[in-house]
Amino acid sequence: MTDPCTAFKGFYSICLLIFSIVSIMGLIAYEQTNLSSAASPVVAYLAIWGGMLWLTMVEGSQGSLVGLAPVNRELYKDSHPITYKCTAVANKGDNLDRYLMGRQFMVCMIVFLINISGGPIGGAEIWGYPDWLKTLFFTVGLSMIFFTCMVGQLNSQVNASLCMLDYINNYFAIFTFWTAMAIEFSGLLHSSYLVQMMVCALSGQEMISKEEPRSAGANVFFWARCLMSLAVLGYCCTVTLVCIFTDRTTMWEGVPPIITFVIFILLLCTVGMLEGMQIAFFAVAKLQASERGDSKFAKMTCDLLFKGAGNNLPGFMIGRQLSVVSCMFFVARVTSVSIPEGEPNLFGVSDGVQGLFNTGLLGALMLTIIGSITWQLVASAYPISFLNNPVTYVFLRITLFFEATGICSGAWVLAACHKKLAGFQRDEVYIGTAEERAQKAMGDDSAHLARGAGHIVKLPGFADNAPNSLKKLLKSDPAVAKYIDDAVQ
Image 1 (cartoon, rainbow, N blue to C red):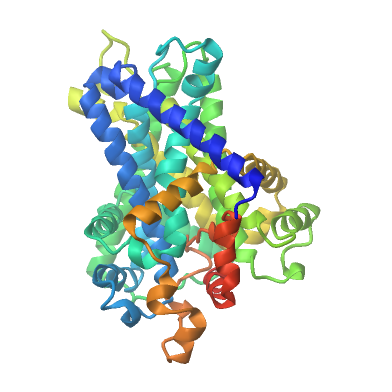
Image 2 (image 1 turned 180 degrees about the vertical axis):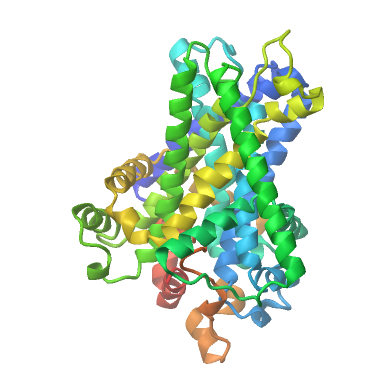
Protein backbone atom coordinates (compact mmCIF):
# COMPACT_ATOMS: atom_id res chain seq x y z
CA MET A 1 0.00 0.00 0.00
CA THR A 2 1.27 3.48 -0.88
CA ASP A 3 2.48 5.46 2.13
CA PRO A 4 0.72 8.79 2.96
CA CYS A 5 3.69 10.93 1.88
CA THR A 6 3.87 9.31 -1.57
CA ALA A 7 0.10 9.56 -1.95
CA PHE A 8 0.17 13.27 -1.06
CA LYS A 9 2.96 13.95 -3.56
CA GLY A 10 1.02 12.18 -6.28
CA PHE A 11 -2.16 14.10 -5.43
CA TYR A 12 -0.69 17.59 -5.42
CA SER A 13 1.42 16.84 -8.50
CA ILE A 14 -1.67 15.72 -10.42
CA CYS A 15 -3.49 18.87 -9.26
CA LEU A 16 -0.66 21.03 -10.59
CA LEU A 17 -0.70 19.09 -13.86
CA ILE A 18 -4.47 19.48 -14.32
CA PHE A 19 -4.25 23.19 -13.55
CA SER A 20 -1.40 23.54 -16.06
CA ILE A 21 -3.21 21.66 -18.83
CA VAL A 22 -6.48 23.59 -18.34
CA SER A 23 -4.58 26.90 -18.35
CA ILE A 24 -2.65 26.03 -21.52
CA MET A 25 -5.78 24.90 -23.34
CA GLY A 26 -7.52 28.10 -22.25
CA LEU A 27 -4.65 30.26 -23.49
CA ILE A 28 -4.82 28.52 -26.87
CA ALA A 29 -8.60 29.01 -27.07
CA TYR A 30 -8.20 32.74 -26.42
CA GLU A 31 -5.31 32.99 -28.91
CA GLN A 32 -2.84 33.83 -26.15
CA THR A 33 -0.06 31.52 -27.37
CA ASN A 34 2.43 31.99 -30.19
CA LEU A 35 0.92 29.54 -32.68
CA SER A 36 -2.75 30.16 -31.86
CA SER A 37 -2.29 33.91 -32.35
CA ALA A 38 -0.29 33.51 -35.57
CA ALA A 39 -2.44 30.76 -37.12
CA SER A 40 -5.53 29.55 -35.22
CA PRO A 41 -6.44 27.71 -32.01
CA VAL A 42 -7.30 24.58 -34.03
CA VAL A 43 -3.80 24.43 -35.51
CA ALA A 44 -2.28 24.98 -32.07
CA TYR A 45 -4.40 22.23 -30.50
CA LEU A 46 -3.43 19.76 -33.22
CA ALA A 47 0.25 20.70 -32.96
CA ILE A 48 0.53 20.54 -29.18
CA TRP A 49 -1.33 17.25 -28.73
CA GLY A 50 0.24 15.70 -31.81
CA GLY A 51 3.66 16.73 -30.57
CA MET A 52 2.96 15.44 -27.07
CA LEU A 53 1.77 12.08 -28.38
CA TRP A 54 4.85 11.74 -30.55
CA LEU A 55 7.13 12.75 -27.68
CA THR A 56 5.77 9.89 -25.55
CA MET A 57 6.73 7.43 -28.27
CA VAL A 58 10.15 9.00 -28.84
CA GLU A 59 10.97 8.78 -25.12
CA GLY A 60 9.47 5.33 -24.63
CA SER A 61 11.07 3.85 -27.73
CA GLN A 62 14.53 4.75 -26.49
CA GLY A 63 14.10 2.80 -23.26
CA SER A 64 12.58 -0.16 -25.09
CA LEU A 65 15.14 -0.44 -27.89
CA VAL A 66 18.14 0.00 -25.58
CA GLY A 67 16.70 -2.33 -22.95
CA LEU A 68 15.86 -5.05 -25.48
CA ALA A 69 19.24 -4.93 -27.23
CA PRO A 70 20.78 -7.75 -25.15
CA VAL A 71 17.65 -9.97 -25.29
CA ASN A 72 17.45 -12.84 -27.78
CA ARG A 73 14.90 -11.67 -30.35
CA GLU A 74 13.63 -15.19 -31.10
CA LEU A 75 11.96 -15.19 -27.67
CA TYR A 76 9.37 -12.64 -28.77
CA LYS A 77 9.28 -13.23 -32.52
CA ASP A 78 5.75 -14.68 -32.39
CA SER A 79 4.27 -12.80 -29.43
CA HIS A 80 5.46 -9.34 -30.57
CA PRO A 81 6.04 -9.40 -34.34
CA ILE A 82 6.22 -5.61 -34.75
CA THR A 83 8.70 -5.26 -31.89
CA TYR A 84 10.70 -8.03 -33.57
CA LYS A 85 10.79 -6.08 -36.84
CA CYS A 86 11.90 -2.92 -35.06
CA THR A 87 14.70 -4.53 -33.06
CA ALA A 88 15.85 -6.52 -36.11
CA VAL A 89 16.91 -3.26 -37.72
CA ALA A 90 17.97 -1.46 -34.52
CA ASN A 91 20.35 -4.28 -33.50
CA LYS A 92 22.00 -4.51 -36.90
CA GLY A 93 25.48 -2.99 -37.05
CA ASP A 94 25.67 0.48 -35.53
CA ASN A 95 22.02 1.31 -36.14
CA LEU A 96 21.23 1.74 -32.46
CA ASP A 97 23.83 4.53 -32.21
CA ARG A 98 22.39 6.13 -35.34
CA TYR A 99 18.87 5.94 -33.93
CA LEU A 100 19.93 7.50 -30.61
CA MET A 101 21.58 10.40 -32.42
CA GLY A 102 18.55 11.09 -34.60
CA ARG A 103 16.23 10.66 -31.64
CA GLN A 104 18.11 13.34 -29.69
CA PHE A 105 17.23 15.92 -32.34
CA MET A 106 13.63 14.71 -32.42
CA VAL A 107 13.23 15.40 -28.69
CA CYS A 108 14.55 18.96 -29.04
CA MET A 109 12.49 19.57 -32.18
CA ILE A 110 9.24 18.32 -30.62
CA VAL A 111 9.78 20.27 -27.38
CA PHE A 112 10.34 23.42 -29.45
CA LEU A 113 7.10 22.68 -31.37
CA ILE A 114 5.20 22.22 -28.12
CA ASN A 115 6.64 25.51 -26.86
CA ILE A 116 5.46 27.37 -29.96
CA SER A 117 2.01 25.79 -29.72
CA GLY A 118 1.33 26.31 -26.01
CA GLY A 119 3.88 28.86 -24.84
CA PRO A 120 2.07 32.05 -23.68
CA ILE A 121 2.69 35.29 -25.56
CA GLY A 122 3.99 38.32 -23.65
CA GLY A 123 1.36 39.78 -21.35
CA ALA A 124 -1.00 36.80 -21.68
CA GLU A 125 -4.19 37.20 -19.64
CA ILE A 126 -6.76 34.56 -18.79
CA TRP A 127 -9.60 34.18 -16.28
CA GLY A 128 -8.34 36.94 -14.02
CA TYR A 129 -5.28 35.10 -12.75
CA PRO A 130 -3.30 37.20 -10.22
CA ASP A 131 0.07 38.52 -11.31
CA TRP A 132 2.11 36.14 -9.13
CA LEU A 133 0.31 33.13 -10.63
CA LYS A 134 0.86 34.36 -14.19
CA THR A 135 4.51 34.98 -13.45
CA LEU A 136 5.07 31.46 -12.13
CA PHE A 137 3.05 29.47 -14.63
CA PHE A 138 3.25 31.65 -17.76
CA THR A 139 6.37 33.84 -17.59
CA VAL A 140 8.60 31.31 -15.85
CA GLY A 141 6.81 28.56 -17.78
CA LEU A 142 5.88 26.07 -15.06
CA SER A 143 2.66 25.12 -16.83
CA MET A 144 4.49 24.02 -19.99
CA ILE A 145 7.26 22.33 -17.99
CA PHE A 146 4.83 20.23 -15.92
CA PHE A 147 2.73 19.37 -18.97
CA THR A 148 5.67 18.28 -21.11
CA CYS A 149 7.69 16.53 -18.42
CA MET A 150 4.90 14.45 -16.88
CA VAL A 151 2.71 13.74 -19.90
CA GLY A 152 5.25 13.55 -22.69
CA GLN A 153 8.37 12.15 -21.00
CA LEU A 154 8.34 10.60 -17.52
CA ASN A 155 5.05 8.81 -18.01
CA SER A 156 6.29 6.95 -21.08
CA GLN A 157 9.75 6.29 -19.64
CA VAL A 158 8.24 4.66 -16.56
CA ASN A 159 6.18 2.20 -18.61
CA ALA A 160 8.84 1.58 -21.24
CA SER A 161 11.38 0.63 -18.57
CA LEU A 162 9.22 -2.33 -17.49
CA CYS A 163 6.99 -3.09 -20.51
CA MET A 164 9.49 -2.76 -23.34
CA LEU A 165 7.96 -5.41 -25.59
CA ASP A 166 4.41 -4.08 -25.45
CA TYR A 167 5.43 -0.43 -25.71
CA ILE A 168 6.93 -0.62 -29.20
CA ASN A 169 4.74 -3.39 -30.60
CA ASN A 170 2.96 -0.97 -32.94
CA TYR A 171 3.58 0.76 -36.25
CA PHE A 172 3.75 4.16 -34.60
CA ALA A 173 6.97 2.97 -32.93
CA ILE A 174 8.34 1.80 -36.28
CA PHE A 175 7.46 5.16 -37.87
CA THR A 176 9.23 6.95 -34.99
CA PHE A 177 12.28 4.72 -35.32
CA TRP A 178 12.63 5.30 -39.06
CA THR A 179 12.11 9.04 -38.63
CA ALA A 180 15.08 9.13 -36.24
CA MET A 181 17.11 7.04 -38.67
CA ALA A 182 16.19 9.38 -41.53
CA ILE A 183 17.30 12.42 -39.51
CA GLU A 184 20.67 10.79 -38.88
CA PHE A 185 20.97 9.74 -42.54
CA SER A 186 20.24 13.31 -43.69
CA GLY A 187 23.61 14.37 -42.31
CA LEU A 188 22.29 17.29 -40.25
CA LEU A 189 23.96 15.86 -37.15
CA HIS A 190 27.10 14.46 -38.78
CA SER A 191 29.32 17.12 -37.23
CA SER A 192 28.74 15.11 -34.04
CA TYR A 193 30.79 12.30 -35.58
CA LEU A 194 33.73 14.68 -35.83
CA VAL A 195 33.41 15.32 -32.11
CA GLN A 196 33.17 11.56 -31.60
CA MET A 197 36.44 10.97 -33.46
CA MET A 198 38.16 13.80 -31.62
CA VAL A 199 37.04 12.52 -28.22
CA CYS A 200 38.25 8.99 -28.96
CA ALA A 201 41.58 10.27 -30.27
CA LEU A 202 42.19 12.50 -27.25
CA SER A 203 41.23 9.79 -24.78
CA GLY A 204 43.39 7.20 -26.52
CA GLN A 205 40.43 4.82 -26.65
CA GLU A 206 39.41 2.88 -29.72
CA MET A 207 36.04 3.62 -31.26
CA ILE A 208 34.34 0.21 -31.36
CA SER A 209 32.10 -0.44 -34.34
CA LYS A 210 30.08 -3.50 -35.24
CA GLU A 211 30.36 -2.78 -38.96
CA GLU A 212 33.00 -3.32 -41.61
CA PRO A 213 35.13 -0.31 -42.65
CA ARG A 214 33.37 2.03 -45.07
CA SER A 215 34.04 1.70 -48.79
CA ALA A 216 35.58 4.57 -50.77
CA GLY A 217 32.17 5.72 -51.99
CA ALA A 218 30.64 5.48 -48.53
CA ASN A 219 33.57 7.48 -47.15
CA VAL A 220 33.00 10.30 -49.66
CA PHE A 221 29.29 10.38 -48.80
CA PHE A 222 30.08 10.35 -45.06
CA TRP A 223 32.60 13.21 -45.17
CA ALA A 224 30.38 15.25 -47.49
CA ARG A 225 27.62 15.06 -44.89
CA CYS A 226 30.07 16.00 -42.14
CA LEU A 227 31.04 19.15 -44.06
CA MET A 228 27.41 19.94 -44.80
CA SER A 229 26.55 19.52 -41.12
CA LEU A 230 29.37 21.88 -40.10
CA ALA A 231 28.14 24.47 -42.58
CA VAL A 232 24.54 24.19 -41.35
CA LEU A 233 25.64 24.36 -37.72
CA GLY A 234 27.75 27.45 -38.47
CA TYR A 235 24.78 29.10 -40.18
CA CYS A 236 22.51 28.26 -37.22
CA CYS A 237 25.01 29.81 -34.82
CA THR A 238 25.30 32.92 -36.99
CA VAL A 239 21.54 33.45 -37.24
CA THR A 240 21.03 32.87 -33.53
CA LEU A 241 23.82 35.22 -32.44
CA VAL A 242 22.74 37.98 -34.84
CA CYS A 243 19.18 37.77 -33.54
CA ILE A 244 20.31 37.77 -29.93
CA PHE A 245 22.52 40.84 -30.30
CA THR A 246 19.94 42.72 -32.41
CA ASP A 247 17.20 41.91 -29.89
CA ARG A 248 15.08 39.95 -32.37
CA THR A 249 14.21 36.86 -30.32
CA THR A 250 11.20 35.98 -28.19
CA MET A 251 13.17 36.74 -25.03
CA TRP A 252 11.29 38.77 -22.44
CA GLU A 253 11.17 42.49 -23.12
CA GLY A 254 13.69 44.63 -21.29
CA VAL A 255 16.42 41.97 -21.10
CA PRO A 256 19.63 43.40 -22.63
CA PRO A 257 21.14 41.37 -25.52
CA ILE A 258 24.37 40.69 -23.63
CA ILE A 259 22.39 39.21 -20.72
CA THR A 260 20.38 37.12 -23.20
CA PHE A 261 23.64 35.80 -24.67
CA VAL A 262 25.04 34.92 -21.24
CA ILE A 263 21.80 33.12 -20.34
CA PHE A 264 21.95 31.23 -23.63
CA ILE A 265 25.52 30.02 -22.97
CA LEU A 266 24.67 29.06 -19.39
CA LEU A 267 21.62 27.09 -20.57
CA LEU A 268 23.67 25.20 -23.18
CA CYS A 269 26.25 24.31 -20.54
CA THR A 270 23.58 23.29 -18.04
CA VAL A 271 21.86 20.95 -20.51
CA GLY A 272 25.26 19.60 -21.53
CA MET A 273 26.29 18.88 -17.94
CA LEU A 274 23.02 17.12 -17.17
CA GLU A 275 23.25 15.02 -20.34
CA GLY A 276 26.88 14.15 -19.68
CA MET A 277 26.22 13.34 -16.02
CA GLN A 278 23.69 10.70 -17.03
CA ILE A 279 26.23 8.96 -19.25
CA ALA A 280 29.00 9.28 -16.63
CA PHE A 281 26.85 7.97 -13.77
CA PHE A 282 25.85 4.84 -15.65
CA ALA A 283 29.46 4.34 -16.73
CA VAL A 284 30.69 4.25 -13.12
CA ALA A 285 27.62 2.61 -11.55
CA LYS A 286 29.22 -0.85 -11.51
CA LEU A 287 32.78 0.22 -10.75
CA GLN A 288 34.32 -0.42 -7.36
CA ALA A 289 34.52 2.59 -5.07
CA SER A 290 38.31 2.69 -5.47
CA GLU A 291 37.93 3.09 -9.24
CA ARG A 292 35.58 6.07 -9.13
CA GLY A 293 38.20 8.79 -8.71
CA ASP A 294 40.28 10.10 -5.84
CA SER A 295 39.24 13.74 -5.72
CA LYS A 296 37.09 15.17 -2.94
CA PHE A 297 34.14 15.90 -5.22
CA ALA A 298 34.29 12.51 -6.95
CA LYS A 299 33.97 10.81 -3.57
CA MET A 300 31.21 13.20 -2.44
CA THR A 301 29.28 12.66 -5.67
CA CYS A 302 29.55 8.86 -5.54
CA ASP A 303 28.73 8.70 -1.83
CA LEU A 304 25.57 10.68 -2.47
CA LEU A 305 24.65 8.90 -5.69
CA PHE A 306 25.07 5.31 -4.49
CA LYS A 307 24.28 5.58 -0.79
CA GLY A 308 21.68 3.38 0.90
CA ALA A 309 19.52 1.30 -1.41
CA GLY A 310 20.81 3.19 -4.43
CA ASN A 311 17.59 5.12 -5.04
CA ASN A 312 19.45 8.36 -5.67
CA LEU A 313 20.49 7.24 -9.15
CA PRO A 314 16.90 6.89 -10.43
CA GLY A 315 16.03 9.95 -8.34
CA PHE A 316 18.65 11.90 -10.25
CA MET A 317 17.12 10.67 -13.52
CA ILE A 318 13.74 12.14 -12.63
CA GLY A 319 15.12 15.42 -11.33
CA ARG A 320 17.38 15.62 -14.36
CA GLN A 321 14.44 15.20 -16.75
CA LEU A 322 12.62 18.09 -15.11
CA SER A 323 15.75 20.25 -15.27
CA VAL A 324 16.53 19.47 -18.91
CA VAL A 325 13.03 20.15 -20.20
CA SER A 326 12.99 23.44 -18.23
CA CYS A 327 16.23 24.48 -19.90
CA MET A 328 14.88 23.48 -23.31
CA PHE A 329 11.90 25.82 -22.96
CA PHE A 330 14.18 28.69 -21.99
CA VAL A 331 16.51 27.93 -24.91
CA ALA A 332 13.48 27.92 -27.21
CA ARG A 333 12.56 31.38 -25.96
CA VAL A 334 16.11 32.67 -26.42
CA THR A 335 16.68 31.21 -29.90
CA SER A 336 13.24 31.60 -31.54
CA VAL A 337 13.41 34.51 -33.97
CA SER A 338 10.87 37.35 -33.73
CA ILE A 339 11.06 40.10 -36.35
CA PRO A 340 9.23 43.28 -35.26
CA GLU A 341 6.40 44.31 -37.58
CA GLY A 342 7.58 46.43 -40.45
CA GLU A 343 11.21 45.31 -40.31
CA PRO A 344 12.78 43.34 -43.19
CA ASN A 345 13.49 39.62 -42.94
CA LEU A 346 16.81 38.50 -41.52
CA PHE A 347 19.58 38.58 -44.18
CA GLY A 348 16.87 39.42 -46.74
CA VAL A 349 15.59 35.81 -46.88
CA SER A 350 12.16 34.90 -48.23
CA ASP A 351 9.09 34.78 -45.99
CA GLY A 352 9.16 30.98 -46.09
CA VAL A 353 12.74 30.80 -44.82
CA GLN A 354 11.99 33.49 -42.24
CA GLY A 355 9.07 31.37 -41.06
CA LEU A 356 11.53 28.49 -40.58
CA PHE A 357 13.77 30.75 -38.50
CA ASN A 358 10.79 31.80 -36.39
CA THR A 359 10.05 28.19 -35.38
CA GLY A 360 13.26 27.94 -33.38
CA LEU A 361 14.35 24.91 -35.41
CA LEU A 362 17.84 26.37 -35.77
CA GLY A 363 18.08 26.61 -32.00
CA ALA A 364 16.93 22.99 -31.68
CA LEU A 365 19.74 21.85 -33.98
CA MET A 366 22.31 23.87 -32.03
CA LEU A 367 21.05 22.52 -28.71
CA THR A 368 21.16 18.94 -30.01
CA ILE A 369 24.76 19.08 -31.24
CA ILE A 370 26.45 21.61 -28.95
CA GLY A 371 24.36 21.25 -25.81
CA SER A 372 23.60 17.53 -25.83
CA ILE A 373 25.42 15.06 -28.08
CA THR A 374 28.86 16.65 -27.70
CA TRP A 375 28.71 16.53 -23.90
CA GLN A 376 27.45 12.94 -23.93
CA LEU A 377 30.33 11.87 -26.16
CA VAL A 378 32.85 13.57 -23.88
CA ALA A 379 31.28 11.94 -20.82
CA SER A 380 31.43 8.51 -22.47
CA ALA A 381 35.22 8.86 -22.75
CA TYR A 382 35.91 10.78 -19.54
CA PRO A 383 33.31 9.69 -16.94
CA ILE A 384 35.72 10.12 -14.02
CA SER A 385 36.47 13.70 -15.07
CA PHE A 386 32.77 14.47 -14.77
CA LEU A 387 32.77 13.06 -11.25
CA ASN A 388 35.76 15.23 -10.31
CA ASN A 389 33.92 18.39 -11.36
CA PRO A 390 32.34 20.25 -8.38
CA VAL A 391 29.53 21.44 -10.66
CA THR A 392 28.48 17.80 -11.03
CA TYR A 393 27.97 17.51 -7.28
CA VAL A 394 25.99 20.76 -7.16
CA PHE A 395 23.74 19.68 -10.05
CA LEU A 396 23.22 16.28 -8.44
CA ARG A 397 22.04 17.98 -5.27
CA ILE A 398 19.66 20.21 -7.23
CA THR A 399 18.15 17.36 -9.24
CA LEU A 400 17.67 15.24 -6.12
CA PHE A 401 15.92 18.18 -4.46
CA PHE A 402 13.54 18.50 -7.42
CA GLU A 403 12.77 14.78 -7.23
CA ALA A 404 12.28 14.88 -3.44
CA THR A 405 9.61 17.60 -3.73
CA GLY A 406 7.44 15.09 -5.59
CA ILE A 407 6.50 17.78 -8.05
CA CYS A 408 6.54 15.24 -10.89
CA SER A 409 5.03 12.34 -8.94
CA GLY A 410 1.93 12.68 -11.07
CA ALA A 411 3.87 10.89 -13.80
CA TRP A 412 3.51 7.64 -11.83
CA VAL A 413 -0.25 8.10 -11.70
CA LEU A 414 -0.39 8.79 -15.45
CA ALA A 415 1.85 5.78 -16.11
CA ALA A 416 -0.44 3.50 -14.08
CA CYS A 417 -3.51 4.75 -16.00
CA HIS A 418 -1.71 4.46 -19.34
CA LYS A 419 -0.56 0.93 -18.53
CA LYS A 420 -4.09 -0.11 -17.57
CA LEU A 421 -5.73 1.39 -20.65
CA ALA A 422 -3.11 0.05 -23.07
CA GLY A 423 -3.06 -3.40 -21.47
CA PHE A 424 0.71 -3.38 -21.03
CA GLN A 425 2.27 -6.34 -19.25
CA ARG A 426 5.74 -6.72 -17.82
CA ASP A 427 8.28 -8.29 -20.15
CA GLU A 428 8.78 -11.27 -17.83
CA VAL A 429 5.22 -12.41 -18.64
CA TYR A 430 6.29 -13.04 -22.24
CA ILE A 431 9.99 -13.93 -22.12
CA GLY A 432 10.64 -14.90 -18.51
CA THR A 433 13.34 -13.58 -16.23
CA ALA A 434 17.01 -13.30 -17.15
CA GLU A 435 17.72 -16.52 -15.24
CA GLU A 436 14.91 -18.42 -16.96
CA ARG A 437 16.16 -17.28 -20.35
CA ALA A 438 19.67 -18.42 -19.50
CA GLN A 439 18.38 -21.86 -18.46
CA LYS A 440 16.81 -22.23 -21.91
CA ALA A 441 20.18 -21.48 -23.54
CA MET A 442 18.70 -18.18 -24.79
CA GLY A 443 20.37 -15.87 -22.28
CA ASP A 444 20.99 -12.16 -22.77
CA ASP A 445 24.03 -10.98 -24.68
CA SER A 446 25.30 -7.58 -23.54
CA ALA A 447 27.65 -7.48 -26.55
CA HIS A 448 24.69 -6.17 -28.57
CA LEU A 449 24.75 -2.98 -26.51
CA ALA A 450 27.70 -0.79 -27.47
CA ARG A 451 29.14 1.23 -24.60
CA GLY A 452 32.27 3.22 -23.87
CA ALA A 453 33.99 6.09 -25.64
CA GLY A 454 31.99 7.47 -28.56
CA HIS A 455 28.68 5.85 -27.60
CA ILE A 456 25.74 7.74 -26.08
CA VAL A 457 23.69 4.80 -24.83
CA LYS A 458 21.79 5.72 -21.69
CA LEU A 459 19.36 3.61 -19.72
CA PRO A 460 16.45 4.96 -17.66
CA GLY A 461 16.42 3.81 -14.04
CA PHE A 462 12.89 4.70 -13.06
CA ALA A 463 11.78 1.29 -11.80
CA ASP A 464 13.93 1.54 -8.68
CA ASN A 465 12.30 4.82 -7.70
CA ALA A 466 8.72 3.67 -8.14
CA PRO A 467 6.02 4.00 -5.47
CA ASN A 468 6.13 1.30 -2.79
CA SER A 469 3.37 -0.74 -4.41
CA LEU A 470 5.38 -0.98 -7.63
CA LYS A 471 8.68 -1.64 -5.85
CA LYS A 472 7.09 -4.63 -4.11
CA LEU A 473 6.63 -6.26 -7.51
CA LEU A 474 10.37 -6.08 -8.05
CA LYS A 475 11.15 -7.39 -4.58
CA SER A 476 8.71 -10.30 -4.91
CA ASP A 477 10.88 -11.84 -7.62
CA PRO A 478 14.62 -11.36 -7.14
CA ALA A 479 15.23 -12.52 -10.70
CA VAL A 480 13.28 -9.52 -12.00
CA ALA A 481 15.37 -7.12 -9.95
CA LYS A 482 18.51 -8.89 -11.14
CA TYR A 483 17.43 -8.52 -14.78
CA ILE A 484 16.93 -4.77 -14.42
CA ASP A 485 20.19 -4.44 -12.52
CA ASP A 486 22.06 -6.39 -15.21
CA ALA A 487 20.65 -4.10 -17.88
CA VAL A 488 22.73 -1.18 -16.66
CA GLN A 489 25.95 -3.11 -16.26
